[in-house]
Image (cartoon, helix red, strand yellow):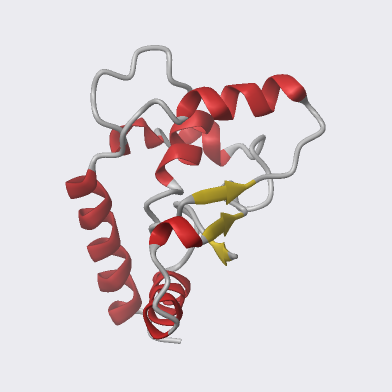
Length: 122
């Protein structure tokens, strides 16, 4: 299980992928977690529109659903674990799985994360 999603830093993404390569694990053998950075109700999800990472058409797709779906590509994982006590929230997330991510946009986002890390080393 690895940290996944738009809020995962490039160092976490690269470390996850390096470990998966080392252990010869395919994406369908990996689990992502914490796709919302701790809470799907953070104000961030009302300001950021992660639908840009989803291939059209995506009518009716919420920002939370798009963030969840994008988490499957950051890093590439076969499953994403979320914590909820709301069946309707879980159903909303399951509905998001019918959408496809936009690979080129996820790749561009990763490049931006790398560039940001180079400008601001730890």
